[in-house]
Image: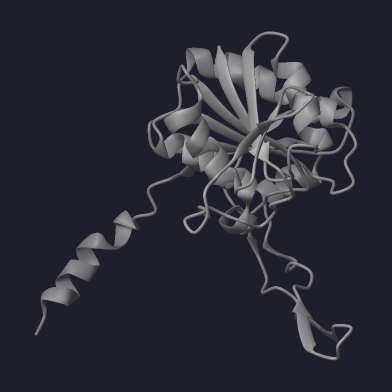
Length: 248
């Protein structure tokens, strides 16, 4: 299978290299990734600057853009033949609950789906890294199953893997997104010239983390696989909204 592999941690990230090694044993893999860390970039596109692509000694391609740029460029212009699957990761740190709104890892997969391809985003739930081999093996197994059970055309998979040896995983759970509390206050400081600056603080603690959520699966040592819809229409509200829109 032809796979386009990207990430948001940058072309030099350990998680990207680990996933490439695992996937390339069975598949034809091309890596196109940002030339720097783009965590938190969400679905941003670089509309105010030209994109440049450079081949690295590793054989990976680095782009001076966002994760979404990398996938769009790869599919729309750079690759001679369209990939059959887009994979994004392995992210350094979880993408659970509300995290998916901001995640460049998830955005790269979403861009693949917007371009008409099935896509998987995968994260290891440890910012310092660790058992990337475990997450890579989980992805390889999911790809095998997807060959028999293709994803619906409006969905991607968001996969989170505990930082454990593969043998210690407690299985795989299909989950829904949990939800966090409001983020903690931003950190206020000064730059060397005495000007006021702000840093984002810690993410909020889990608010909705009960059974069935991605948070709960990870807490219990299981992999979380959450199907995400790229169509954000709130269909359950259409009829009700139509009725009050029509009222004078």
